Image 1 (cartoon, rainbow, N blue to C red):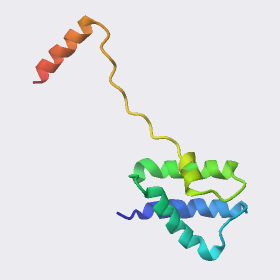
Image 2: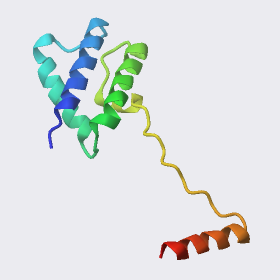
Image 3: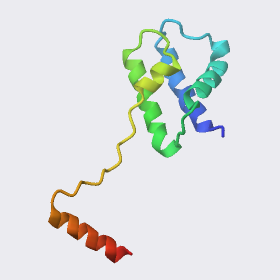
Length: 110
């Protein structure tokens, strides 16, 4: 499924990078094609959600703008993208009493 918000985020990021006059900046005539190529490279094998990932796209472009001296690649963009927040892990039961309470709660659920 084509996600237009990704093109919007890439285009906005590109606009800011273009203003920095980085080495190897694509010519204005090929920027639309560059957006398409980046979109394809970024989504390959990945699933993005606008609410969750649009801020991560913005932060990745900000990081690239801060440290790049040349036009970045999609790979550099993905490496600059902040990691997803980790899910809360269930704590391990540490003693028999805790284990017993857990089993009682499980029985109550059933």
